[in-house]
Amino acid sequence: VARKEAVSSRTRRAGARTTRGAVDGTSDGGTAISEKQLKRFLDLLDAVRTRDLPTRSGVENLAASEIERDNSAFGYEVISALTGRSGSGLAPFARTLARITRTTGELQIELLNPDDPTKPLRPPNGSEVKVLVKDVVSPVSAVVGDDGKVPVPEIQDTQVITGLVIRDQERRPIAVAGRVAAVS
Amino acid sequence: VFLNLAQAFAAQGQPRETVFRVHPLQLVRWLDEAWSAAANVPPITGATQPLLGSASIVDDLELPDQPNPPPLLVPSGIDPGVGNVDRWTEIIGPQAVSGSPGMIWHHLIYAYLVESTGAFEVFAEVVKQLVNGEGLGTLQPPSIRWLRSTEDLFFRDPPPYSISSVISELRPYARINRRQTFWRMFGFDLPHPMPGGVPGSMSSEVWKQAPGIVANTDFRSKWTELLRQVWIGLEYETATTSANPTDASYIALLCKTLEDMMNNRRRSGLLAREELAYVSTLSWFDLTLEADTSIVVDLKANGTSPDERLSKLAARVGMQPAARARELLQLAQPVATLMRSIELGLFSTAAQASALFAGNTPLTQDMRDIINLWQSATGDRVKDRPVGQPQPVETQPLRIPKPAATVSSNGGTR
Image 1 (cartoon, each protein chain N blue to C red):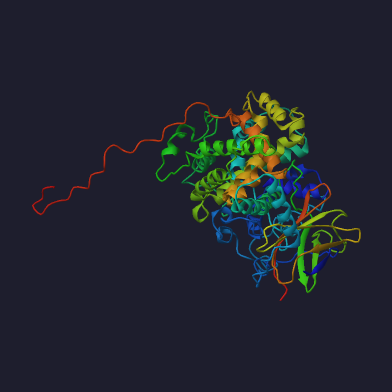
Image 2 (cartoon, each protein chain N blue to C red; image 1 turned 135 degrees about the vertical axis):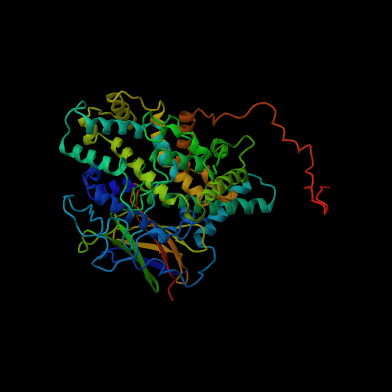
């Protein structure tokens, strides 16, 4: 498992619409369950065990549903944000846009400020970054540190990132991005 | 749609009602850019259905990509970062540019719920009285801009070739077009009648029987049952001492049914343009009521909530909004998000459907609000359990279908 450092500082004006679909992953990524998911799975098994569920398949189903349902809740929140819901704390991404690129061992998040390309922009300290990886059902979470770096463990170079959401400390989404290929 | 634009202004420190100061020509262009921005939306996690019913509908109907400088049509030029909206900025509007995550407008149910408050008809009367007389008093310059844009955008035929131009010789009445779309998608008609004297108002029932009209008339019963089952899930989520009647598989089945119903009406991208046009129309009025905007203040309709402002505006022109306008306005956005999620197939398995009631997430919080507000707005007793004996299943048909009569060689039948 590689440890990534995501750096968010550079800003760049968005250009012509040419990138759509151009960065789809070429690798099918890993399907191994992450350490965090494994812990969650085991915690869940414990929780389930105390409820005396009768069959093993019942346990597995519950565990699967526990992991999978994050997917739907996550997708729901992305839709909330993309539709620009007002008054709900779910702001759209009108000002701060994210682009993620990656090299071996590093995941770089650029927050794009179309209005002032010279001014560095980074997520506020304490912002939460959620990264969704292809074929791994539960998003990986990390928090932006004081140095502006985001330690995002558990993402391997061969894995394709399908989505990313950054929230500020009040849990308002401030950026979203998607479709980042594996490192070739 | 205009809520997205308002949010873009707000993010730059501008008032949300700056939208009303933008020239209507720019706003129409921005709607085309908003349409294109839907193609930038990243794949939604867990979605099994294409956005808007077709993976290609946005590309199919958008303008061709233009080299710079654009030889055909200039961009909307709306730049939320520039304080002066009177200066055209030569850029594509927010969220349509590359690198942007794009945007998507609210689901059609948003337009239905906001229009159900009667807001559109109240504003129609307000605009009518303002442009035809002086009974409502004098307006300040920002309100004059609102009035001009409102009349241009929503009470006049849209410019040809615009994505929002969903009116023509063949479907000439916007009010009927919207009702027909709501009817097809949800089997819902608006609770208020078509106002007298409005073009097309005499044919308000005819459109339901128009050739080729297929409506999801079973939508409401399935939707209400879904809310009921999710409420059971929420109620028993923390229960430890009783048997839990929550059935995630049944909830998934109901979601799947609703998903199928909506996607059947959206085959090949049907209703996508209409949805954009109608949602943008109603979002304009929703945005107007959202705060004490200039037009609200000039018409002395200040209030502490959107429904109060609507009531006061309605009173100024001798009208009355829906009794449950408050709930309907509060419902509109969360229900739209939920409906879009269902339509995309986010809850079509038991595991996924359990996200609707399990844990304390933004989704489950929204579900509680939706259930409470829907029950209050419609009177559907979502939280009540059905009592009495279960209804018997319909019996099989008594007659076995006969084979069709065949014509014999001598002309008789046998």
